[in-house]
Length: 141
Image (cartoon, rainbow, N blue to C red):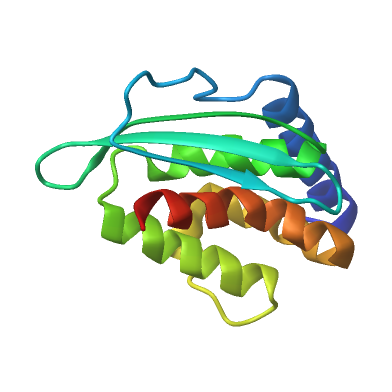
């Protein structure tokens, strides 16, 4: 893809997930939950998870408010971890962090999340994209 086409796709995906978030229903009585908050900008993500006996994520829900990047990333994250084991979800989290920090990352593991690589062009927004992933880690600790 040409850089402008990729940039347009990046914007389109962010806006789609921001306006139509996936897995935005609250899970009542989740096994795991956490609240992520960025005091500098006010972004917030509340995350709930249910896992089965094999530690596979069966249900994931989030609610939040904030910038398009933080909320779209939360939506994309929930799609990427549903049906994955906790270990797999944390491995994806680590690869996402690496991608945001400009380190070598496993793009095959990231799959659709790779579209968010464009966030790196806006360094002040990197924390926005990492909020939901930090909240995931907090919910599992």
